Amino acid sequence: MPVLSEDSGLHETLALLTSQLSPDSSHREEVGFLRDVFSERSLSYLMKIHEMLRCYEQQSPSPVLHSAVALAEDVVEELQAASAQAHSDERELLQLLATPHLRAMLMVHDTVAQKSFDPVLPPLPDNIDEDFEEESVKIVRLVKSKEPLGATIRRDEHTGAVVVARIMRGGAADRSGLVHVGDELREVNGVAVLHKRPDEISQILAQAQGSITLKIIPATQEGDRFKESKVFMRALFHYDPREDRAIPCQEAGLPFQRGQVLEVVSQDDPTWWQATRVGDTNLRAGLIPSKQFQERRLSHRRAAGTLPSPPSLRKPPYDHPCDSETCDHDGHLKGHYVAGLRRSFRLGCRERPAGLQDGKAPAGCEALELPTYEEVARYQPQPGERPRLAVLIGSLGARLQELKQKVVAENPQHFSVAVPHTTRPRRGQEKEGVEYHFVSRQAFEADLQHNRFLEHGEYKDHLYGTSLGAVRAVVAKNKVCVVDVEPEALKQLRTSEFRPYVIFVKPVVQEKRKTPPLSPAWEDTSGPLGLNSGPCTCEADGAPQS
Ligand code: 5GP
Image 1 (cartoon, rainbow, N blue to C red):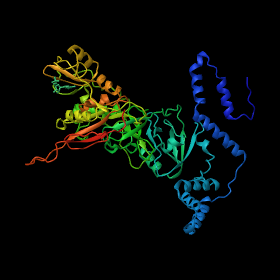
Image 2: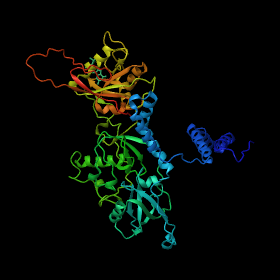
Image 3: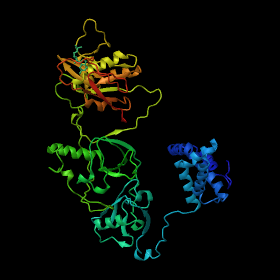
């Protein structure tokens, strides 16, 4: 068996360890996991960096100069003075020294060289154990800027203690790793908080700037280890925490607009998720109502007949105050905490309307779907991937059928439509699989039951519909399948398989004219797909799809 010497680096140690991992039947999974971890490229890079830093440390390097920024400024000045007859090298150096990255790097160099690491925390008080002889006390010293601590507190109703209720992901408390849910807060900057009201504590915390010292009795269980959650949700409603009487801490709420994409970083609390807005520079998470909770609220509002009316008109039970949490922001809050609500509201998707009607009907029956969030993922096109679907949505006036036919006729190599199914008998020249797939009513209804239709309708006692299979058949030929559906059917299509490119086709309202227009009826409004629409305009939605 190979032996490691004292000088063996971390790299060799782990390489040796990996070679020694013999999969024993009882620990096969763990061994496999370790092997994967050790053979990861990023770990190997990290180890190389670690070893190089160690070598470098042994050389005990010391800075050659302490103010590289000043030196660079002098050089720039001289180069500028001689810029008229400067060589190309000098001009390049001048440009380089002006780049923000290089300037920032030189600033960092000087900070390290001058060892000016701010802020310096004062030493811990010596008498800390005298007050809390019995309990294990943790003194936490944090540097607090203007940003809030990113924690909420509540009073334990049995013991009266002030405990940390929630840690906001990415906030100061979270980043410190020193404050946890369930920790009991005893003092803030030497001020005992036991007999203070939550809003008073909140004020002390909010006003504290710079170094802040917390005396904490650590929670017996570490309950706030964030479970890794990286889910992206598009909001289907507008949210303002200041108008939400149910939120446990209004100041910790995250306002968002309908259509915004949110990154849900914690779903530990089934009622209040923590999220950030995608593209936001603020990385501290805020509270948003969970999908389940929002669905419940909406379904209660719908039942109470208050749905689109403002929530203040009639309060459903889920808007009533409950338990409160306070956070370190200015102002008192009348929040309440509605925990433990379980998802029970679901529309029975298999229930279909009794009779099929003329025209298109969505295959699913999500007509009463509550607009909360829809899960999305960033769309990253892969080379050689199957074409996306082109979905046309529009009112009757948008003449989608004509538009579809025109698109296909113009470029049949690239675009195609799905062959519909029908229960009507085949006519003279018609061929199976060309005009229609001719099927029995029984077969059609069986497929309907299995949600195999994207849309369907009834016309003169015969069923017609577009099946998902027919759409797949077009995509399999490497063509863009152009479909027109009711908006409700979009749900079925917004999958990673179809990645639909949704185009809303709006009829152009023509002004009544006495003389006919000189131009042809078709107005060219080529979109990104090269769709030439009829008397309509298109708005495309190519945003991330689930
Ligand atoms: P025909 O039987 O004359 O071929 O078509 C009669 C009607 O069936 C058409 O005018 C059209 O409205 C409807 N139809 C044809 N294909 C489909 C389809 O895929 N879905 C729905 N909902 N209706 C269709």
